[in-house]
Image 1 (spheres, rainbow, N blue to C red):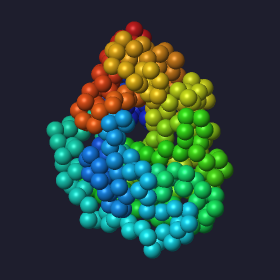
Image 2 (cartoon, rainbow, N blue to C red):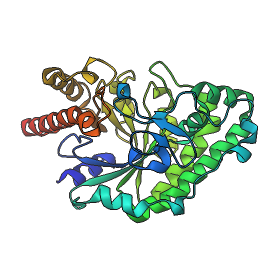
Image 3 (tube, rainbow, N blue to C red):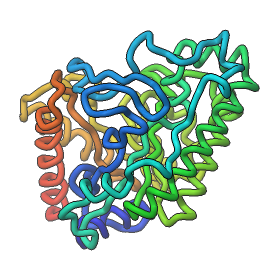
Length: 330
């Protein structure tokens, strides 16, 4: 098997020859490359008029400019008058895809399109996390209508993603949890966000992509919801969740991609010995269970993308070497 065949085999609940490693067996495209969603590199306005910043403290990852919001609890009912959604047809998909896929051998490389700002994240980008949660409680009808509009936009974008990227997998990024628990109650998630996730996943599958949901934080209470929505995997699963138990219970029909302790010491270090030890822990604790895919990243206080990805690249290289080494011992 090559990397693509191995990754897709595990994702489809078949038998892989080694534990897949995201960043090695899977090529990331989209996400912050899409300026319509995340603004230009280094910060600026996205296609919706939201202003983004790229602080070094977050490794240059784009975040909404603090305090610069388009909506609040008082005006959320007027969102149709205030917000202007961009036209996906006017975006430069072809140029983005050409730049990101240059030199990629699609026969051996599994390509993922990462679609940032899922329904909840986009709501928070419009108005901040606190205002978003208060609006969900105080003006649920208006917020639900807005979430539907966001999902409709995502579904329109999927047609262009399919046409120009032809990705093997599609990852919807929508962080609905903190390290302690979900931002909202599971019931609120199921009532307001789950239907939109389900619609997006269904369209991705219709277009030939394997749908994956990226969600950081302690979200294991929602894993069956993620499955019911039609996703084949939950990505960026952090060890604040009981990953071993989740794999034992669901790994034969749902994949878990993650494990690396990004928020702990292993995610804040350049010490290759610490990185290797954490990789070995992940393979030891999760690798023998079905449905496991190794994934993680290392946080670096820098805004230069090359510097940010350098340590994560070392982590991925060590992980894939370890994965093949363990395979030889079987």
